[in-house]
Image (tube, rainbow, N blue to C red; front, side):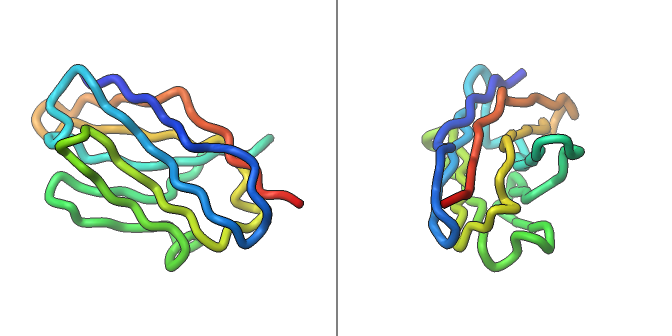
Length: 117
């Protein structure tokens, strides 16, 4: 089962950008579809974006056109480029990886993103 570590969160002003990273270890990362989720304070966790093993992507309507998910299998890393950030994007962001061979699902510990003046 793959282990995941997120990084890249922080404080940014509205309209700014951040790039989150999800680093995988312990398994062949290219065999995993990887998704980003987020959970705001007092809110349910919501799906943000996904990238499949063949590089296909999909996004939640709330982030479409502002966020871009990508992967570098040589570095065992998936990225979430977040542009034009809004205060409502404030949340803890988690990455999740699902194996295309076993169906096993793994989660990272999360990274905080705060969008505020």
